[in-house]
View 1 (cartoon, each protein chain N blue to C red):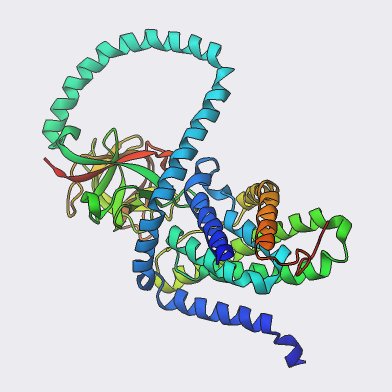
View 2: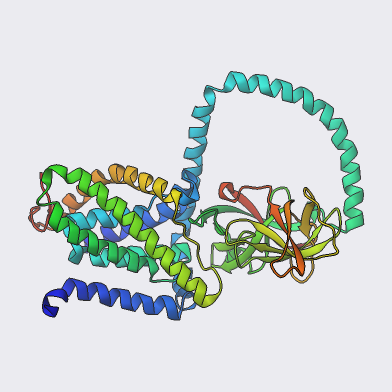
Length: 183
Length: 270
């Protein structure tokens, strides 16, 4: 219960920061996807099965706070979590020395998938409803978004890892279980 | 083979995508509006605190950055001060002229509005943005379609959705935005429309009406509860509509929507 409350709070804070705090420091097209980075980190650490609930919750909150049709961010996050988990199993175990580089690649890939799915949905919805419900972008600004996401990854990776370790200790779980990489 | 492909993980993914796609396409906004209202009521204090905190941090950063420029800034201000003294006398004359013009155009001075000051607590993350969230809602008497201005009487948009302690403002750049406007210099009338977050267009201007680059565009007060005479922007570029029936003008707003921190909602005119 305590674990779930902490995870819920983390997702809630991430969504609030992404919508109300980060836009002050970044141009609109480069605002980092804090919730997305959280999902990628959790997927790398815990796998798809354990992250799917968190992906749905984060996506749901993000859709509510961004006034997007509910479901778009959920689809995006669950898909990214699935792909990240699939690739993490194959690369993070076999290529331990390239771990950091591979995680950065996951963030780059996740950002691109996120943008692509948003653009596709925006196009379909604009075509069907004949009004623009939201207008994502996909161009040179996506490069700056990738950079800001990578910077954010380096900032939050260790704190999230510490929180996860604390939660593991709290529930008396063996820290080795279900991890793709360990020191 | 098919057994190998359809793993429980893939089934879970496909099920989630199917359910979400069902919600997205069948009911984009309506179904979850009460949930969204509840969420914003809960999130409101957190959003407000994080936005204010961000603003303060941004200001501190700007201040630290500006220390190195202080000497240059001082020299610039000294020169500017001399210029301003001469401009004051000129502005006094213009003030009188402004009052006369307002009388002639029937514009409402800013003091005549019942304003509700609000802090911006969130904004559209998409390119250029088409909405902002403010920290006042139905509890403070805010209602849908109320116009929103910044301190100088510059219209930035209208209230679109209202929650208990917050409200969503559709900016003039939003595709849903549509406000009657007129060219102050030539009295040409048209409709201000958002260009999908990319700018503002003065549309539906008759071909025989005159439009000039640099003209001031204000609200005309027709057909909505937006009062007459709120500044919208200046004409930048004039072209014909695709069907050649009307003229269109690209209007440049004076304010940067991404930099808004405090706005005023016009509840009514006094």
